[in-house]
Amino acid sequence: MNVVDQIMAVMEAAFEPHWGEKWSRGQIADSLLIPGTDAIVIDGEGSDITDRQGTAAGFVLSRHAAGEEELLLIAVHPQHRRKGLGRTLIEMLKERARARQVAHIFLQMRSNNPAARLYEATGFTAIGMRKAYYRTADGGRLDAITFATSI
Ligand SMILES: CC(C)(COP(=O)(O)OP(=O)(O)OC[C@H]1O[C@@H](n2cnc3c(N)ncnc32)[C@H](O)[C@@H]1OP(=O)(O)O)[C@@H](O)C(=O)NCCC(=O)NCCS
Image (cartoon, rainbow, N blue to C red; front, side, top):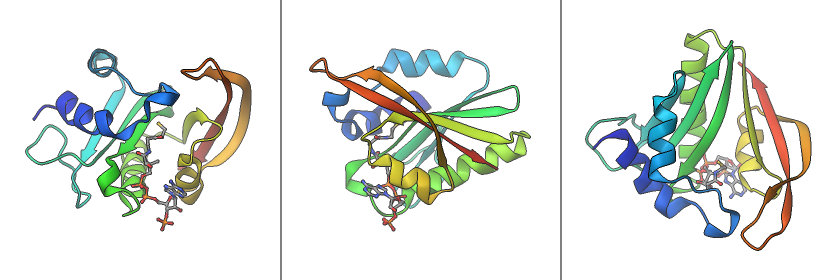
């Protein structure tokens, strides 16, 4: 399976529509054409199956430029949560980022996302907030929190 199909298989199941965070197939395909964009797909055992055979259980999408990496999107299929796969994806991303001489990884998320617990458990610290940055499906506003980690 190609990487876009693998990512979409997880994406369709992983994101609650209410928050409007799901990316379309076109957005994923286009993002992967931008230099520095990188995807890692793992199966339910945590093995890297990017662009290979296997059933995708989680993915992380990132972009690196000028010595910095941005984690764009991370998701684990609901049937595979709380087994350490999210942690595995972040550790894999850190390893790759280190290999390309990146010093920091950044990410931004809506303020009420439980993913914050995963980021804190993997060494990220909240470093900033953008007030009312995101708009929800029902027109509400949510703050954006920026997290960073040195690697
Ligand atoms: C966030 C997400 C990727 C976590 O994946 P996961 O495989 O369940 O995470 P892990 O099992 O590796 O969790 C590692 C640690 O993070 C914390 N954690 C992860 N998810 C948590 C949750 N929903 N609530 C509280 N703590 C959580 C825990 O400390 C956990 O360790 P523990 O299970 O030993 O207590 C997954 O819930 C998901 O896909 N969410 C929907 C997509 C999303 O919102 N992505 C982030 C924004 S792009």
